[in-house]
Image (cartoon, rainbow, N blue to C red):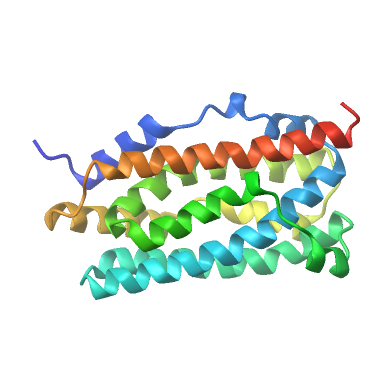
Length: 227
């Protein structure tokens, strides 16, 4: 029996879920033991991730339109709009972390942190849009959990103000409209026979690259703390 879109989204998220306790960096931030420099590097890496992901989502939206898949196109357009807002909210975070304009402009990103957007760009070129919706939606749950934890820690442990926490709070907040768009995109994909088992492979790799992002930052944090 073919699952409904709701069932498939739920089962995919469950199968691909990351253990938040296994994250090598976020618990340190939660306890206030991560170096301030590590938070700065996180923001600097996101300064490269966000515009790359935005262009990937825009490309996915255009591909979906060409394939007469308006539901997936709407989902990816919404993601692209969200990335534009996230880019704006990075500015006060970088300032709170003590990053100058010159450093932001000249910072050299790390391969381990940029593997995620590189793979999202691959998906934008090669993935069936409905499969990519499933893969990314599963990842958003783990990313949102991390952002919620960091937003709270920035307030309670690092004394950051509302504006400086805004980037993480954006991703930590529920997004019911986006959830509805994902549901519509997956259901349309099922109805048109465009959902395949590839979404699990895509999702596993997305989650692995997410883990690499945090591992790279955690290694730098150990060096920053003299560990």
